[in-house]
View (cartoon, rainbow, N blue to C red):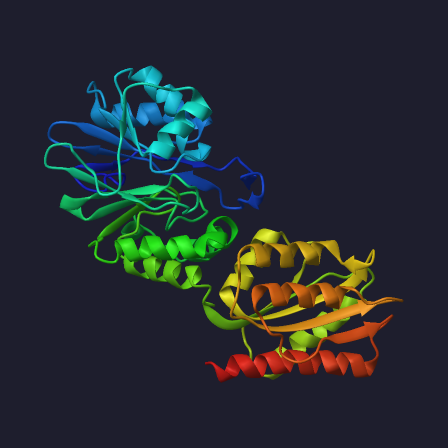
Amino acid sequence: MTGTDISEKVHYIGVNDRTTPKFEGLWPLPYGVSYNSYVVCGEDRIAIIDGVEASHAREQIELIKARIGDRCPDYLVINHMEPDHSGAIAALRAEWPDLAIVGNAQTLSMVRGFYGVEGHTITVKDGDTLDLGAATLQFILTPMVHWPETMMTYMTEERTLFSGDAFGCFGALNGAVADTDMDTDRYMPEMVRYYSNIVGKYGAFVQRALKKLADVPVGTICSTHGPVWRQRAAEVVGLYDRMSRYEPLDNGATVVYGSMYGNTARMAEAAAQGLAEAGVRDISVVNASTTDLSFILADIFRHRGLVVASPTYSDGIFPPVGAVLEAMALRGVVGREVALLGSHTWAQQAVKTMGACMEKCGIVPVGDPVVAKQAPTPDILAACREAGAAVGARLRGVE
């Protein structure tokens, strides 16, 4: 078998994208991204599992032909309709007019809506199966992970789960496909970033999907982004379980701040000093004006501790910090040890807004907010250090 052979019957036919600067036009891709697709060759029939983004359709067709030769694929199974996976549908149907499109009712409605493709479709329900000949595909509906039509496809004979976007991550594949053939450490932080950015809002639905999979013996996970997981499959499922319960991954801390003229920045730095003095070793200090929200969210999902510092701006919160808190509340982040720092010149509003966000998230801050009027005095900076130390004490208490 070659590096793209998952098994004798399952083969990788995905592509890399090292050109697109931002995923969904929002999330930076410094290491690129892969659009994973697979072909399952049964004794009697052939199924393609998921497609690729439209600009890579020709490349995927050539990969399919290189794998199956002059045979025609019988089925295109669509686990997820987002265009980075469904963009090749029209091209695949044009290449093989008899290709049957397999999906649930919501999927097939989206196929019509996005691409105007109709006819020769197979509607599947939860638990339905498709026999390819000594290769059985079972369909597991997992709505809202992270679109309403999402499902997974399980190949029973080989205990292989085609999981759609679940268990995926940012980062193009560099030669190898399976985790057994590469150093996957670089992909784990990108999985946290992918989850926090894309899937984070839907933790309750991820939990429902994991419960459905609890009794399914999974040996290999073939997601639509990132490596094929074998060696670390259980670890990856465990990571998704923790993140979807909004459980922090470590007892580190994120200090996120915005600052116009450096005063609030000094307060944030003082809080970071307090965290360090309390024994916290993993501390991320991020300027919300210069650090992309994508990376800040990943830190917030990863760390148990959080310090937020903002000046008042236009009778409200400093917009870049407000965007962080809005994204955090949207995703329902809970279970963090938080300190709030604010500054103002004549009317304090930032701390009020930050407090309202914490209340919305069900988070009770550690101690009262530290507030500076105009420039922070030595006493205010000492209070910021104490606020950081108080968060650090909470973090050390749960180690």
